[in-house]
Image (spheres, rainbow, N blue to C red):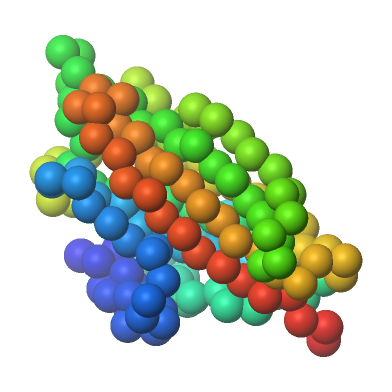
Length: 163
C-alpha cells in the first residue's frame, strides 16, 4: 500500500500531457525519471515504511546521474508462472539528436508474475549522466509483455540546467 501511496503522490506532481503512463488491455506501465534510482529500487524491494519520496524529475544538473525507471502491472505469466517484460529504449536530446538506443532490454525476465493489479518496479532501467553539452533528454520506451504480445509506448523528458 505504501508503494501505491508514493506513486499517487508522484502522479499528482507530474505535468499533464506527458506520455508517462499507458495501458493496453490490462497491461499497464509508467515511466519515471529519478536522480535517486538506487534508493527507489532498494526501498521498493525492502517492503513498506521505506520513507523514500518518489518525485517527478523535470530538470537535471550537468554531471548528475539519473535513470529512467519502469513500473508495470498485469503482465501475462507463461506456463511456468513467470513474466517476460522487455523494453526498446531511445534517448534523444530535446533538440532531437540521438543519444542512444537499446533493443529488447530486460525489465522483468523469467521472474514470477506479480499479483494481478499490483504495481511492480522493473528490475532494470536506463541511466545516463547529464551533459552540459545537451539541452535535455527525451526518454522513449516501448514496454513489451513478451508472453501476451501487448506493448505500451511511454515518454518522459528532463531539461539540463546549470546550477
